Amino acid sequence: MDPMTEMLASTEESDVAQLTDEERLDWLRLIRSDHVGPRTFRALIDHFGGARAALAGLPDLARRGGLRGSPRIPSREDAARELSAARSLDVRFVATSEPDYPQRLKMIDDAPPLLAVRGNAAAFALPLVAIVGARNASAAGLRFAERLARDLAGAGFAIASGLARGIDAAAHRGSLATGTVAVLAGGQDKIYPPEHASLAEAILADGALVSEMPMGWEPRARDFPRRNRLISGLAAGIVIVEAAKRSGSLITARLALEQGREVFAVPGSPLDPRAEGSNGLIKQGATVVTEAADVISVLRPILGQPIALAVEDAEPPAPSAAEPGARERARIVELLGPAPVPIDDLIRLSGSPPAVVRMVLLELELAGRLERHGGALVSLV
Image 1 (cartoon, helix red, strand yellow):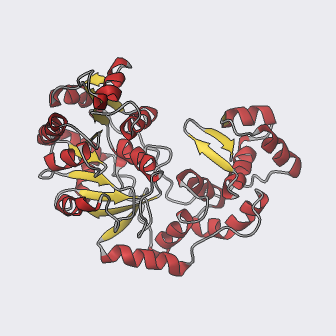
Image 2 (image 1 turned 120 degrees about the vertical axis):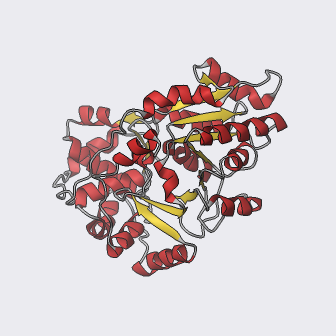
């Protein structure tokens, strides 16, 4: 086994809490409920001690946050149908506590509680490098992306990308033989673009398709930036090959930096608009890549260090007793507005205990009144 693979595999030894079928059903119902994203899911589990108790308490929290009516919570039958549809395609819902969950992805603060996985999960045990770039890529860009992916794969890396036209598809093709991971913006049964269905099938032999979206979900424009955080979250570093000044690839690069990942960029002609964004990243300090060795030399020392993961308790946490009073709730809401503010500032300015502030934010989020941003920032919707 490659030394890097051994190191990554060793991080899993104490983190193997397997969900029961009933727990998986409850987790799926909770993450599919209105206004429940990965961070909110974790806050609800921490507060109630488990998904079933969170499902029971969610309507009251949402009403306290200002929701009129009841939040939409999928029924057990709805969740069971989704699980059945997934099984019919050999898709598994893997929880963050389970050994097949990608270890680096677990490090990000908005990791999906359940990840729909189809294919060979062994690809997650390899160190991953993400390669993304322009959909309307040049012939030279496509050729370089495929060669870079093939060379990195030969050095023991798996390649992650988004199955998009252009650079993404070239990166997947270059690493088919050794394992590549495609992150989908829609459900596992809604491959996008449709013409990449055969490429998706080819990936399954030695690689995997992953998604956090429900089965049957058709990808929308706003789903692609959400997908991009998973591409960068899976990887130790991300390589940008041809990116315009305003492009999804630059969003992925920004997310990678926020996640503490290494950012690489392939230089291009200053006369080609497709290289304007990637050239800009180099000016801002991204590592220049002209061959696989440029990536390997930066990542080898990083991958030689163990991945720092929070160890999840074998027993669920005790339910939190923090219950805000009416005055505390009003004060915290008064401090919020459309401009994002740090949660630490809300704690300091409100004078309320951190647990109380977090509970008020949870109530507002479940009522659809709060938006969470990167860097522990929140704002009213």
